[in-house]
Length: 162
Length: 154
Image 1 (cartoon, each protein chain N blue to C red):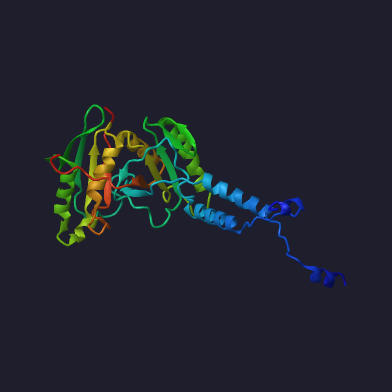
Image 2 (cartoon, helix red, strand yellow; image 1 turned 30 degrees about the horizontal axis):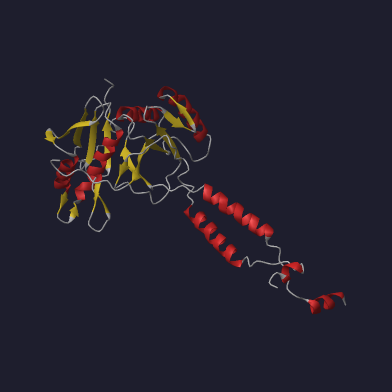
């Protein structure tokens, strides 16, 4: 019989590897070229309701927002920080002030979640300083490398272009 | 002689197994490091960095990405345009959203990827344009990076 005959003379079955290797190399090259090593990105949620207070009763437990004024010099660099009429020297001091308001030694107090910060920035202030200021008020990284959120309600006051 | 084998015309079969092993390892490595979710990043935008910008746990609902360049132009839907043209393009997007069941401008989230050198006023102008068209949810995107704030008094 034909089949039996072939089985008897079997040496090694030669698989043709060429197409598989071709395909695998194609895949390899595709994934290599599409590789982008990028830092992960995260989000800041901001509260931007369309109009002034929505319909219905205002929430009586809502604390008035903390006003933070950021001024810029001519080049758009951060010049001054003011929090509730108080002049601050650095963003680090802003963080300390905010933490003193809403945190005790065990971490954020329950009111922290209700506290709102309102940034009032000069039109030409560079965006990166605003993100730094938002970083300063909205949380910190603790000793165990965890992110502790302090204030999550952030809004902006719009200023006209000068 | 050593070369006898070749002379007699027998094909040599190099062992491909190790090469295929290594190649598969590489394919799998590149596959796993591939990230489709950050496809919209462009070279034009240098995001500001923040240590507490945590990547979201779940993807946002109906995301619309708006990128703002250092000069204050907007990149939307793969096109760069001045801020003044944004409203027209967004309106088209809004009409498209409203033609789909269960979607509307007020439920969509606008993801703002603005360059760190842009002016905050320009970002606010873009937000105001979105608000005029009933978009309500906004997130500002930043690169997650450790950046130590200057110590007090420095």
